[in-house]
Length: 449
Image 1: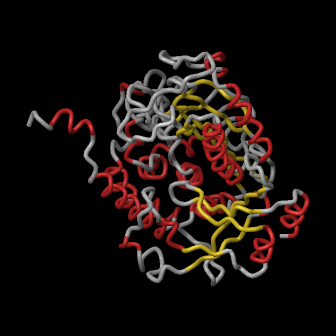
Image 2: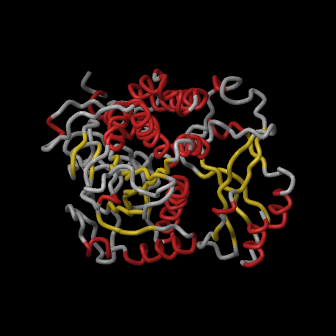
Image 3: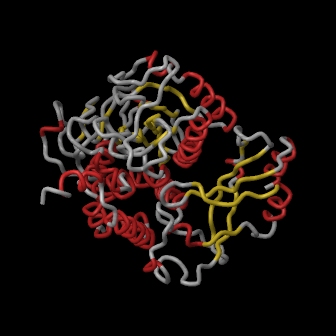
């Protein structure tokens, strides 16, 4: 941990934010004076309640989790900061550092239901076979006016022209430049944190943007996506707008996704296992796709984790409805982009922007791993629109949870305790959602039924 101390001294850090992603991908943890943080490193004193890993997005806790997936005594676990993640928090006036942590029980065992550990578990499966997965996420998000009334629909913000976007501006350069000062700050903040972002483009929705990340190791990219979400939200607030990663924030507009490009290289030869020398598809590549086809519907609570997520997955909305695959076909759930042999990959287009990046990557890589190890064979690629084919992805979170909790294969790869924890948390969130009466119900049922 000496390099952490050196970083803090070099940058004259006064406070340290110890971050740990919860199930929803929200940053939990503690803020400490730098001196106290350094002392805590030497005595496992950086502690938080284990129950934060089953905290719902509403801040509640499922009581049935006690004694099943967490201790009924709400015991502490301790945090171990990852030295590779220490960086500045560039938007604070006072010198502040942040560091992402892993969580452990006091017997030295990792907390099996923590998001970062679940991804590490899947990566280890690949490593045991001398495989190295590579990912590159693409994150979409909307900029919207500040909205303090949850019953009021969201609106695109006013740009530097003084007008709101009212028409589709997909890939519009000037439309992005409407918010140029905001994005200049996003790039500066990302550079200060070592977040390796690449291309910014305008997506199909009004004030909807997409940021692409350069490819790399899954944990590194999950860490960067986790910090990026926080960064964009902070930069937007500084410019008096909201940035939202909701899957479907506005009626009549497309949803926001987190496309995950993934490939696998041989650890020893550093060659892409998905392509032959002549550029043809390898059997491992086709099996990886087959695993995604077969098992993605069973891991949907990790790719589409909220009730709102399923509003995005509708036909002709720039989002998939099934797990068909095709070459450069954006109507499919699994797209194989045109590429050189060394860059052969498959793009999982199912995950929403609201997904926890650690869990979305873990789920997607797990499905591909199962296909590779079981030597599954994919269905033939789709050459025209996949929207003409059956809607085979779950349509609601209820359906998704039933498939998730009933899959023995998913439990064997991701861990039975983790699957139970997700199911309990999402059941609790669904219960809270069911108690809310929507404006649609008041509009159409109040005086008509």
